[in-house]
Image (cartoon, rainbow over all chains, first blue to last red; front, side, top):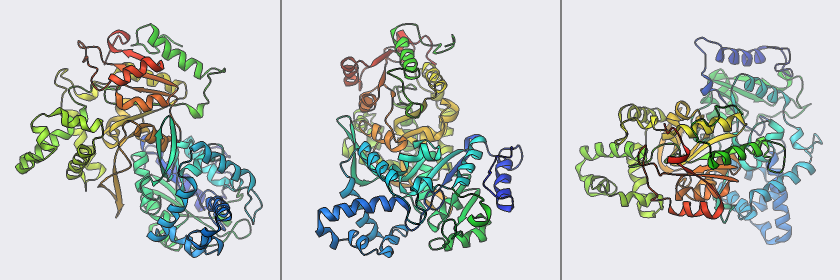
Amino acid sequence: MTEKVLASWKDGPTKRAVLDFVRSATTPGAAFIEVADRIATFDNDGTLWVEQPLPPQFDFVFRTWEEEVKADPQLAGRQPYKALIERDQGFFQGLATQEPQVVSTLLEAFARSWAGTTPQDFDAQVREWMSTVRQPKLGRPYVELVYRPMLELFDLLHTHEFRVFVCSGGGRDFMRVFAEETWGIPKENVIGSAAAYTYADGRLVRSRELLGDLDLGAGKPEHIFAHTGRLPVLAGGNADVDIEMLASARFALLVNHDDEQREFAYTTGAETSLAKAAELGWTVVSMKNDWTTLF
Amino acid sequence: MTEKVLASWKDGPTKRAVLDFVRSATTPGAAFIEVADRIATFDNDGTLWVEQPLPPQFDFVFRTWEEEVKADPQLAGRQPYKALIERDQGFFQGLATQEPQVVSTLLEAFARSWAGTTPQDFDAQVREWMSTVRQPKLGRPYVELVYRPMLELFDLLHTHEFRVFVCSGGGRDFMRVFAEETWGIPKENVIGSAAAYTYADGRLVRSRELLGDLDLGAGKPEHIFAHTGRLPVLAGGNADVDIEMLASARFALLVNHDDEQREFAYTTGAETSLAKAAELGWTVVSMKNDWTTLF
């Protein structure tokens, strides 16, 4: 391997574990993995880019809802608009835990905003957001806050004939807008929660319904199998909603956000996954100590 | 291009239309298609392999149901088992036209056979069928009855950086068992009708529910967009259930089964698509006249 491999990863046990896995998986021997089976999957929010103070897609969605409340002030008394106005983060945490009332309220609001729109409409809205909005603490557009070490890991995996997929609880169509230019991942390798679309009169139009379940928790290996016909051999995540995906892989990488100076330090929503990592021997990335460059 | 390109296609307007499309799509000019957009999708039954006297998956499914009727003779009075015993093809045609009563009856029977099984169970059953059952007229296993000219077209498309997907009304998981060895297409490029799977205790288990809608008619572009984030630029099909997919592509190839001697001659289920081909200028393949070798 050349000097450039995982250039932003500090030499040490974490980098060594990643390199050892890739080497053993691609070298004849007991741990060899057939090329066909080389599926790697990565969560997005907090694994590939900054997810504080909120996953970036929430920033995008909230701006849409704020406009809707301006146009129809009566919405302000209803969820999820009420929680948005009151900055009630607890309400939105109910999505990660898939609390039925929260999920249905949110899906209803998504449908209100986007049912009847085309993929082209939605792409244009996301691109507008990408080019104008900056992350408040770091002052840069979110697409510039993608972790360089993870993109280097994608390169390493691609070099070794792995197919890399992103698998996020967030919106499949949201991520697909920037997947190719930002991650070098084709749209078809992006798996996420998604609305159903209806094709009629030569046009695709978004419906009010979700296609399948949310891509969270057990939903992650379910979505990955549905999409690829396999479970991953390598998976990367950073939160409790990634546990089932990480557990389904042979090699699991858990990103620990411990870098208050360059990014954020928090374990909220990752307590169980950190315990699982210790229990099951997953490789934990300390952002502070294992990554020399973040962005 | 070398002499070997589309070697089993006879020189003439059909072959020329295919070559012209690929050349213009991949050469700078007005018809150039960016690599990212080079998505090609093909129906399976009747487009990639023989679908007479019944789509091969029905042969597989019917054998399972025959065993179930033997074990529980009371089933013989109920649909779809009754239609199977009485060789009532009209009943099963209701699947192609998505007649709700027929669809729900069939889904119920699929659930009875496979709910609770793992992907490994199902793979083993399909492999057993693949290696033991022969097509009645041609006397060969179905996986040997894949059209060589279409595999040559896959090669041509791959050479020109198209990504090739198979998109069938038939079962996604059924096709994925043989996709890699038979078509040279990775499992993740197979799109089809599919059951939902549940992940629990480290295992995937098939549920009773369908994931999304059937991959037929308008369902084809809907499934293709859900899977790839795009509509195809080239599509191949052979039947009325392929019309929407063919219409969504820039270049449409319709296979006409007019070769009674080497295969079958029929237009049942393709009447409207043949009319559409004439109306919209789709390229129609005469199996008899355009393909020098079939298998």
